[in-house]
Length: 242
Image (cartoon, rainbow, N blue to C red; front, side, top):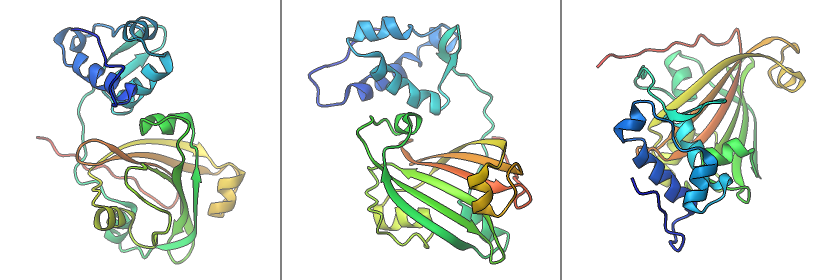
């Protein structure tokens, strides 16, 4: 396969490189475990910086298509497919359990997020994203703290009524459909900030859930992190075999 990109094109270099690598990983030799060219060699062949190359490959790592092995290299990921069907938004989850939702606090700001979040959206450090922070719960007490960052391509202004369901706003007001969700779930201890927000003790167990949300074209639209009080949620996954 010829490794070449067009430096005169109006298409950003990292987008071109991402497309090139997507083509590479469909080749049988890479599917069968052959290492991708190392970053130094590939960036030199393409005439780009290693940062540009890393920006392109980060998206594929987030999507689970590539796997970086420390001290070994980057290979095509061949995970066992265990997709859950019909994932729900937080509002839908709570409604299905008969829980009335209350927003205890809502904060909006425009920030330059950490590098891993910028890479998820395929952006560089010059981009500010809309950040939404919400403490939510039932009518008795708060039990979850959410932080969301949104793709600037959606068009959110920060003037929206976020008492409405988030994905309803996206779909009805901006014609952006949240279709695919990928999640990472870990257990952590509450730090001082989380303990104050959720009304618990420092060191109490917390369920941390990262959610990466994409539209039907697999374009990233939201990076979300939720911190749940451990006694407030039972996390259930329903999977369906084809």
